[in-house]
Each structure stands twice: as C-alpha cells, then as structure tokens.
Image (cartoon, rainbow, N blue to C red):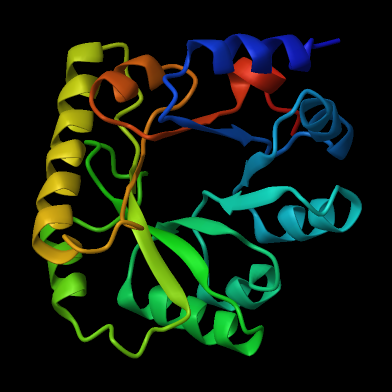
Length: 222
C-alpha cells in the first residue's frame, strides 16, 4: 500500500512557501484521494470531466477541484457548478463557454491559459502569439471568468536543460503578459508548471503551482 500521507508531507516540506501543490488524482480511486485529504491535502487535479463529477459527489465538499486536462466545450457544463480553477484554456471559444456556464450558476471560475512550449505534437495549448491575440480581444463581457495566470508542460525527456529552457520561456511570457495586460490585477499570479519528474526545475524557473501525481499516489491505476 502506498503511504500517500507520507509522500504528501515529504513533498510539501520541500516546496517553497509561495508554491501550491495540486495533487493530480486522475485514474486513482476516491479512497486514495481520501487518504491524501486526511493528510491535509485540499487541492486535487483531474483531467476527465466524467471522473471528476463522480468523485466530487462522494468526496468532502471543501476540496478545491482543479481541471488540468484538455477540456471539450460540451463538458464545461458538467463541472461548472463546482470547479475552482481550469488550467487548460486553449481558445477564446472555450473561455467564452466557461463564462457562459459560470454565469448560469452565479459563479466566477478561475482559469489559466495553457501555453504550448514543449516540442511535442501531443501537447496542447496556445502559442505565445495566439495567447497575445486572445488577450487583445475584447474580454470585457466575460465577467464570470478570472484569468489567474498561465499553465504549460515541458517536453517529456531526460534532457533537463531542454526542460529548463522551456520552463524559462514560459516564465518569461508570464512576466511579459503580467506587465502588459495584468499590471493592476493581483489575481494574475499563478504559473502552473512542473510535474513529478521535473517540478524542482519548474520551481527554480518561477513556478507557483506544481501538479504532482505519481510521487504522491504511485503509478496510475487505469
């Protein structure tokens, strides 16, 4: 049996005070999440709407749920009643749909813009130029979303210098956008980057939010 509580305590002890831990719980059963919850973890990340909705029904209501996977517009309505943060906004269309569904529930949903920095076709996200174009759009009527920062994934590789370079580019973009578009908006503050195999480098390059699954729960149970 995994000692989930021990893993959480060890990781939290290693994180700087300004870095938030998102426990990536996708494909793990509710019992495993409950073990993490009892160890004090309150922020969990899921990547499939159906699985997230099922878990939200049976787990404690003070959990802060983050959606970290590719989100289809037709699934937004399923998670809008309770989702705290969506890390994977990769189009204006998706941002508008989140706003529409949040409005139906009288909520403001926090979102992060997903940026494609990895040299892998399988990764999703906006290019830096697409992100600037989105932010140049008239977003004034989107009163039920709050853009809280950026998210990105580095290339899955053993070449840690390449990983560092990609994180550095993402961090540079974050600071550019902060200065240019969000200078007077303190809520634009999160840079979500770093997973089990590379979060130490991500933190060194400015991450404020790490998404860790394997190092907490062990290998996924499909």
